[in-house]
Image (cartoon, rainbow, N blue to C red):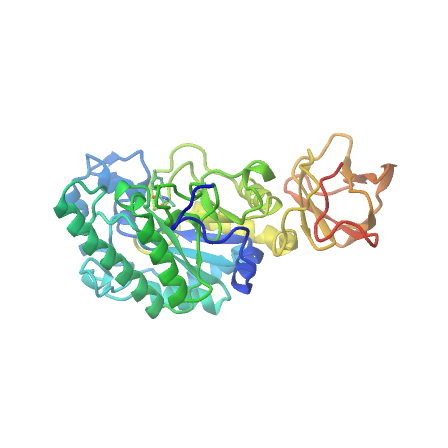
Length: 444
Ligand SMILES: Cc1ccc([C@@H]2N[C@@H](C)[C@@H](O)[C@H]2O)cc1
């Protein structure tokens, strides 16, 4: 392997309590909120087809005009305790909030730049009350932070001249100051969700990303930071030049999910997802496919079945309210999670392969069958590994009688389970003494 100073410093997943908690929560809420919500994906009667939070880069939107939007930021209908309650009702265990997106506008009154809420008509800190409201509901908070900062005079995408290098040196101090400020002001946050780390300026400075990560961990022990912050000294990102994952979990799954265990190599990972095709910030006109609650529930369960977390994104309007499509999905998903959340919370891959009828998840000896595709036979095929016996099966607390159809192979009757939504069958298993350790072997 290649000797690296600034590659991965740990092989295998973190085993500490903070990471175990992150892993057990399984389901998060992403919130993209900022000045881009004022534009809402359109300007002067023209609709921007890109992601709403990128409208500043749209030729029809003069950057000088975008950079004056902060004078209109005044979310009179922003009620963080309502935001937190609806997230709680959805069943989210953690929330990720954009403190500063690529445009550089800070939702907290940073003392390192004037481009913050303090300069807007709203004046007040947005982040503090949000962290407090979510924590009060028992929801952990993570801070999204963009390294790219289109507003800061010292930001550079690449370093071409000594002047660029001098500016970028100042920029790195600014980044470290802002991150320190966020941890000091909001000490209950559990981690950072970094973005905007693909430009050469950052990619070619793996040493800084390494030192910064270690500095933040020392300042705030237990902090959870995904792989997207890091580059190694050869410019490799997420995975270092020896293909070892950097950071605490694989953070590359954005608007896409792994298909099979081999895609995630046993690493902790997190997928982040939009309800429309590709909008993170508020866009007044959602184009293309809008995912239904059942589709989103399937993504959540699929993520759990592959040992990862699933984070669903919401883009509040400029006034602080949520569009009806988003409110509807929070309620529908929450109704399902209230009944079936035990198949997700604290659960992980079952090691039983991918059945046609849906997904297996597992927590200890409890195996959850989450059914999305009811077979015309009305029987769900289950194959358990050798030395594993099926003690009992139940659906919504009612016993279900499996039919033994072969060695360790069963048909579980669907019975009169609902057809309009996914449902869960619980298999209580037990492993004969001496059976495989903590996890089931692949079904033979
Ligand atoms: C090409 C590209 C750049 C940045 C993004 C940002 N990452 C998401 C989590 C959003 O913040 C989006 O603006 C997405 C795609």
